[in-house]
Image (cartoon, rainbow, N blue to C red; front, side, top):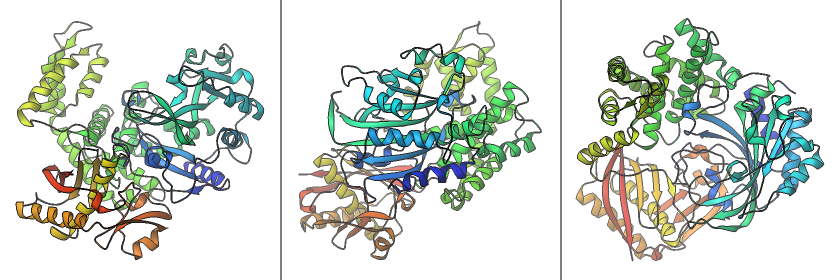
Length: 600
């Protein structure tokens, strides 16, 4: 078993799969562009959904990368030895190319060969799909693992809840998977039968890799149909793998967090590991500041707000502030901790360095905003719970008051209540929040995330119209306008862009006229694959250039619109119908939103 740094592990993984014929592609944004059902990129598959469904990827059928991910379902678990909100996923894909027969032996080779990770075979356990009415038991994967050398007693079977991947939303590519775990307690593992994996005591296993065999598409009605192409999607957690390789008890004791821990110790005069409570506080600050740094430094520019991605960002910054105060972290220190992560990742994710001033400014603003009311809010909380009996419940109105007046996200109130053995009337909070929303923002929008809801004809036409809208806004309003996000369904498009004000009625009319003029001309939409450098030279605009690989797809609509994009698009503008701007909205400072429709 090798001792590796994070930098070495990334390169070792990418080189391994590059030698297997894979093209290395860059990490995509933390906000999924092609999946409007989730707020963040939670796995490497999100940026590749169109290609998993059959679109041709410019880089080919074998891909590998290190993808930035955020998962928010485990925020309350952060502080233990293995959970992180932000993490890096080492991944490789087969887009209709190889399948189980190749992937499983490759996984075994990378894990056990002395040339790569060198893990002892006896320390590796794998799980396979147990089968149900939708899909048979995956005995094929188990047989391949045995042939590779995995001990039969270290092969376990799990139901769909444990060994089935996707879709992240309600529909999309999915299939059985096989997970790889490191056995950390052989005595406990030996007591388990083939189907008793879930009964293992905590700490018996640590999952580090997952091979997903995508062969189905889940429909809106809940049924499963075979995909046009069988795909492989894998994900190896960089932080957990480092933890195992370096013999550490926690992911927070790897080189990734080393400098940040030193900085917090310097700022607080406390020592990581000095007590259970102090260690948990360190870990929460470490995780949440790192996650905030990547969110703020993202190419799509997440900022703290009261909705969607911005709400999650605000919540984790404020949680970091609260736990930081518990160990004496002074006000304004989050940006200093953030700077250690910017430096650590500067070579891997250069956008953090180029956006560092923005990262530090937003962290400081949010920390100052919350710090002004934190102490008073904590006093109000203590006052509210002082008269409650053991196991009592904080009423919803009080929980909303803590949020509305003192900036405590309800999740923080819930957490503080649990620490005291209390509960929160969540339903009452939601009712108070809904009443407030009805008064202040009637008709508030639901979750927004960039991307296409599906590839239906109507959605595809609206996607094409988005390109025309973008070009028209540049011509009518400002050549400096850039896309900041989009969400497209079969009913309408939403387009976010940088602009200091709403469009005037005259500008709206001019944009509509310009778009409809291009539609009436029935211009062919031409797709060409070329290198990124060639695309730039020919005048194609890239909305989020850091996500692109060496080869890209370009779409031109005459000379009016020339963009780098993943598709899909209409064949001709004459298929679109009449373009109409239905509404304008403010998103945040300097960012506006247009909603538009196509009328046949």
